[in-house]
Image (cartoon, rainbow, N blue to C red; front, side, top):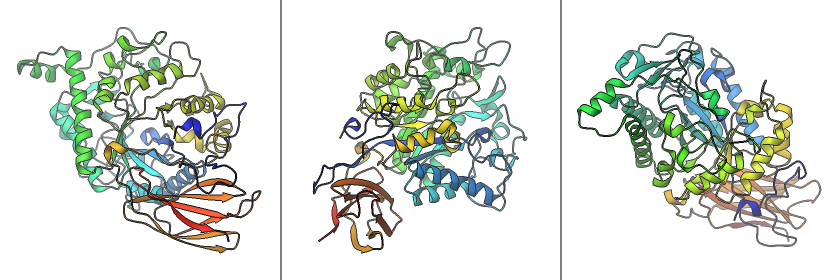
Length: 516
């Protein structure tokens, strides 16, 4: 069922959404479960989102993580995209890369007392019915704000030939086979060892170009739809010369795009070979290649500058979800949000999930700030496109701080009811087993006893109050769940439950409760 049939637009003239699951007065059959991917990025680089600063003890790090997850659950989000590899380092114990300095202030040093942050995040997210997607930066080796020396097992010391200095950063060279192998090995290590729901990579392939002689970079210019002049070229001459000497015939730009394409294709194949249910997502820069852009769209070309041939990835189906960073306002000249979204809809010929990234952290920014209504309206615009079934906020800090009331507005309007993550049928569409449910009237609600198979990720729960169906989502780990009486509409006179697996497939529904 299209989102437009379930949600009203989130605008100032429509501050609330009609109840998501309304089957009509007296209906005995609940409507389809609402579906929408609602996520936020949690950045660890530079301590943007978590932890709030380096060298917090384990207890404080965990408390901050729980606060983020509780806030996400309270807002009716259903996923967190956690940065686990900010700069060829790790926020989890790894034999391949050192501990991140953003945890402890010193690269290579484990949190104290020792614990596994990624495992903690996954366990706590799943306990709240939230998905946890592990976010990797593919090729950044050292951030310009790094404050501690590289650890002995960091790639800049173990394989310096694969690392290039460019501006104030160090970058792994995508033309070096050993650098590609490093990234693949790191991602697959996490896929094998951790119960993640998705692998997510961002927009850093070849670096954003910098201008000579300074290092202001095209990154900020790109957000304004501009390109720099007098750019320094990335110093990958040795790897390119080896390619040419080996008989390669592509020009340097085509060779660079081929290098990135190979990584994307390999990630897609290898992730699914390890675990078929783990979804692979990419969040590239939001403007397409110049020769295909719609009329009126202009600005930075990731195709020519980052060597990201995003349209090819989509058209080959090398990903499961696509999160273009649409970091411009609805009425931005040259980069209008709706026009960009429509462009990516047309490029998504394989029907992969389209969940655009929103620049929510621009609310309250020192310059070029958004009002909360910009984000609310962008969600509304997205919901009018049936091919776009979700969105991701950058970043969680804006929602944690409730900047200018954005969290309150979302909870009261766009997110007034929970939603399931959209199903991913191309990875599997087997219907899960029917759950076992027992129900009894207890206190001010109906107490459910739940049990389902091992493939269960969540339970979908409908309850009818005063002839209107309400919807809830319970994590698979829950054995007990209470359907509370509605303050205005009274107690439930019917409760229906289904099991939902990790790919979003829903079981047959069970009539759990019916008032005599």
